[in-house]
Length: 171
Image (cartoon, rainbow, N blue to C red; front, side):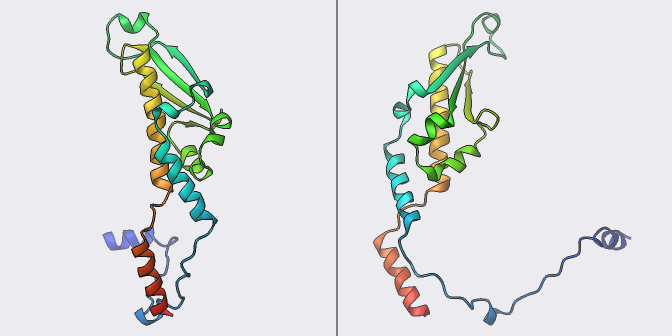
């Protein structure tokens, strides 16, 4: 009974799977190891990320607003505007960071597509300054995570030589 149900269920979405014999799988040769403009972008991004820290974020491009926080905290929650919201427009900020990181940052959970800006909130503390610092740390973490996801690590000379030898042996 289950077989008949699965057979009816998959009638419209059948796909064929062809197994390629092992001797026919590797017909094309790998590309020759070369250094192109993309490698230069990765190198520049690596050096920029090495120098980037929370203190190098330009504070004059960020807009910080305060609002009332939610959650536990007693009467302090309803009386004090301690929740910090940091907004930084990409047009003001993207010219400072490597272009290779832009798509990953735009895919971040903090990116607001309508306003084309990063919106980060901090409300873990009752102190405004601590919440502002939390926002800047989240911004730093987001940019560094984008760098780790996008920028390739530097290849050691030994690995480059090994790949060249494999390429020579393969051709």
